[in-house]
Amino acid sequence: MTQWSKFAVAAVTGLLGAIPTVANAAEIAVIASTAMREVLEELIPMFERTSGHKVTVNFMSGSVLPVKIKEGALSDMVITTPATIDDLVAAGKLVKRDRTDFVRSAAGVAVKSGAPKPDISTTEAFKKALLAAKSVGISQGPSGVHLMNVLEKLGIADAIKAKRVTPPLGTRIGTLVARGDAEIGVQQITELLLIPGIDYVGPLPQELQANIVYSLATPVFVRQVEAAKELAKFLTSEAAVPVMKKLGLEPA
View 1 (tube, rainbow, N blue to C red):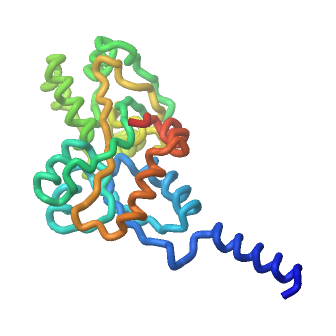
View 2 (view 1 turned 90 degrees about the horizontal axis):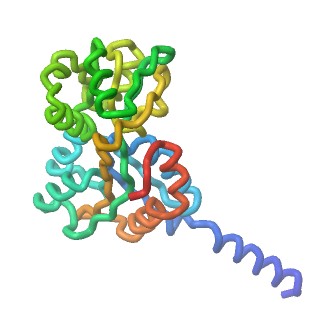
């Protein structure tokens, strides 16, 4: 073999070694809460390009997700709230003590595009804005549950329930606001920012804030163990932080 041939073989070998091969590629199945749609839809393609793996994500609402997993839905990773993870661990569906916190999600307020933005800078101002609105969009998910607990403490839960508009599972509050079905909407910020036809007003006052955590967990019957570990490492790496922050999330 000539010196040039040896060089060419070495170059091709090095190039092939740098590219994930089909033989090494895995198909990773993920079940995730709907609130994680935007961030995962940006991060997953980044991971696929660098790893060579293929990731399929099945998004489910917070109330549907644990039911489906208990019924036997299979995956290599579950992304949901710690309380749901604890419930699924108790049900024997997720591995005990194998939880990695992923992101923290705050709640915010939106109105229809072009509508006046209410003052929500303080607890009293936020309270007045809700009472003044003709209709209030509140989800059935974690942010909605948190908000109704807050409103109970503020003494206005009954007044807001009378004009509460709740979308079907999987439908964002921002969609209701954009259609004019709700004058003001409250949901996790990441679920509001990319909805067309609405204006994001701002976060809830700090003392009322939800700060919902979403975590990664391993199913008992995981198939792609090593590939799922690679995905978890990427999702909790510094490379993921800019995408999180752009979408109104913070690393946990």
